[in-house]
Image 1 (cartoon, rainbow, N blue to C red):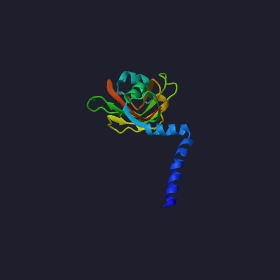
Image 2: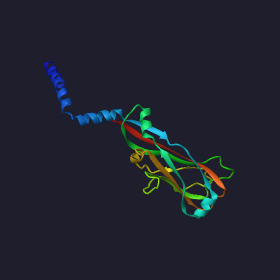
Image 3: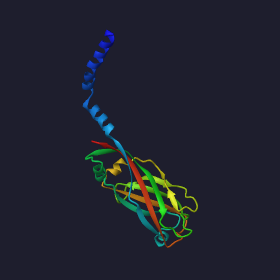
Image 4: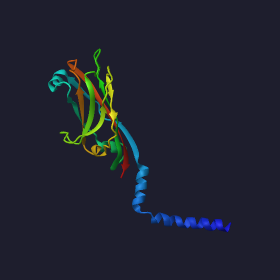
Length: 195
């Protein structure tokens, strides 16, 4: 019985010593890990028309820019909605990218496209691009394309005031309509680590 009491007393006496010997940095990291949480959100829908004249001027069977989109991510407003003044981001990726026809006419499809890809840039001139999604095979008769995500880490992009998306398309023929209204939709997810 005395051995149990002695052992218990030693453990109780050792706890403050163990706590004091841990570095403040380690304790701070453990607190930050406990306070971290995940956020998933959709980026604003991007409505744009494809124009048959513009596409025909680009030349058939070439990769062309279908649209560009500037997205104001607004990290500060995201953080303030959670009552946080300062944080770092981790595990930031796109969760979805889709392209849909907006009220398509009878018989409309993406059959005039052989593939598409979406890139992200920190600058509006797209001097440096990071591919985030692609659609290498488009099923015949499709009116919606769900892109395959490339799971690129996008933390550095989300820390910017604006991010820039560009949609490329590979044509395999002319656009069979005068105009074709489209909607580009995307979502992102990331972990917020309060500071």
